[in-house]
Amino acid sequence: MVSPSAWDRRPSHCPICELYPSAVYPKGEECEYPPSKDGRSAAWRTTHEEKRVLDKANEEMWSDFRQAAEAHRQVRNYINTWIKPGMTMINICERLEDCSRRLIKENGLKAGLAFPTGCSINHVAAHYTPNAGDPTVLQYNDVCKIDFGTHINGRIIDCAFTVTFNPKYDRLLEAVRDATNTGIREGEVYAIETFGSTGRGAVHGDMDCSHYMKNFNVGHVPIRLPRAKHLLNVINENFGTLAFCRRWLDRQGESKYLMALKNLCDLGIIDPYPPLCDTKGSYTAQYEHTILLRPTCKEVVSRGDDY
Ligand code: MN
View 1: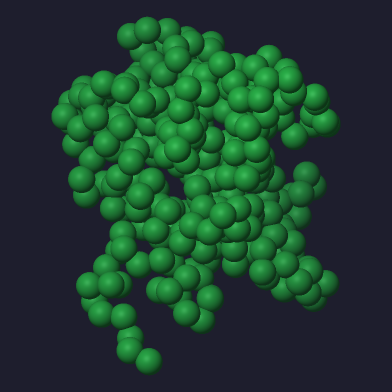
View 2: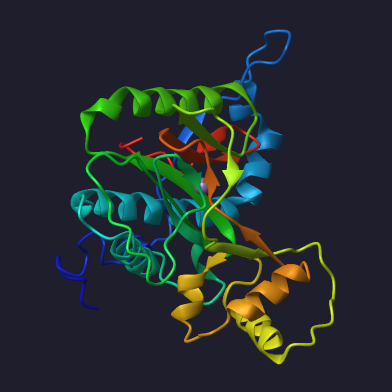
């Protein structure tokens, strides 16, 4: 067997499963659970035989998360080498998503992108990704939250960071990064995303919607419009109950689907997730990690040396 050349193995190019042929993926940061209310340490969990057996029994699941997390780390390292003011948001998202699809080795619903690439800017806190034709260009003074997800077998890594170019935002970012790490230390949480804002800290839905997801509590609903029926089939096949955006319908070859999409939303089959905005003129920042609550310890599986 010929081993992959250095060129094939360069980051941003090689699928993670091929970088780790033994399928043993790097662990995240393992932390002890917080002490109980009476002050007893949770260190016993690490060595407790029953907990260790239970942990081992779920090894396949932890491994899926770790593979998706390694893809996330490598994708974000790659983005940080080229993201610059002057680029369009569409260009940024497409380049990120191309890399992410490659590293996760996209394969139907078994491996892929877990949700649309959030790139919300300034007072927009979350759920913005450009739709086709969006001319928005990243600016030197922008505060851009890159929130993207990878998954293996539906085990989702949801992890986000903030990109800025003007050093005047350094303290805002530092505060939010610290807050996220504090949150990770204090509770038994499975995913923590902290937002810091110079605005009011309250958000409302605003602007053009780009994010959508099936409502998995809804049972069978009869659909009259043939185009809506067709669109739902496309959504079921490609995204299942994972979130998607309009650009991802476009790349499946769908067009003129806005009425059908609205119909599915009106029927309650699909929920729209419009951008969440603070007050105009404010700046929001975000850091987010995914945490595995293992029987023995908690693992900040998406931890990297960047954040
Ligand atoms: Mn997120």
